[in-house]
Length: 380
Image (cartoon, rainbow, N blue to C red; front, side, top):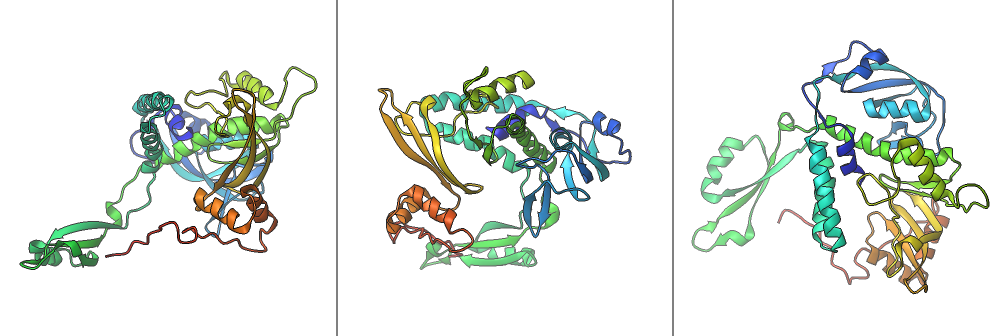
């Protein structure tokens, strides 16, 4: 739960109005509650397998180590982590700062919601999904993009007056077909209005810091793994997949045990567990004992697109196998339908995607051969 955890760890929401930075010294920036700056990176002392540094190219985020002489935007948390993990030197070009304190009520609220979800999750109650969505959407709400239009439903008796008063904002309108009455005609009109940009407000300073704090939680674990020589093969917003080697000698039996022990040494916190901010095994296998589940083979194509062959044992010691899959934009039933149509296993479908990358496209029929309904929504 990286976003809910970030709300509890960031120290609260920045209060007051932003002020323009005129003193660019590190001592001054360290003394304020928060800041948002454009920096020019002068040198990169440590390169990473999964770098934090970001170049925006043709609308696409490119995370790269090659940032000397390049500029990027960071907040206080992000800059501190760049210095810590990438050993950068930099120059602040411009920015804003906040120095009127923080409101930390959100930490209490998020902790309460998380504990409530844990209880419902143990009961296998669907309420836990609502609590999860409530916590995650709290982040999205803070950093919403501009809302360019709004929908209103107008009674037909008021329609003429409404048009006169709002003619310059009306984008389009349609009579609602199920409100037609043979005696009085149409009863309601659905109107799409253009929303002025100066009526849009968000809490970008909150959203940016939540994202940075969530990344900090991931980076603490991931860069420690890299520093210990553990091979990280995939990283996402809230997960990291790495190769777990067995140790023939030394104080630790495998890389996981070593990572957990070193993490506790450096941070004083337990890495694995069910509490807010802790990590747990993401792999699932029906009827298997959680602690026995491991991945033995995998294909990682890009973010949110991967397949992992999973092994485990049940409570009686019987071996179980399965596949843990992600393919953003394509539902699981469609993945299984496509594999069956091609006459291959689901895992081999990902091998096909990997082998044919940049050469040949694989088509996915989201209707599963016409057996699954998909709707296209229009004005009527």
